[in-house]
Image (cartoon, rainbow, N blue to C red; front, side):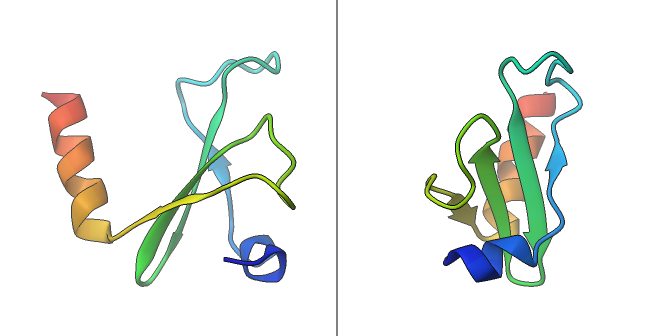
Length: 65
């Protein structure tokens, strides 16, 4: 994913992230993928984890159990 594509996504922080600039995870959804990044990194250069929606749902199911 390039910077232009990433900038078109609507990113939101995890509800578990502190509001004080600590450990923060941001997530954005698109029709075909879930995008995850570390908000402390520069969005223009930081890597983004991209997973299919079914894999993300499986992760959430495991995390909530």
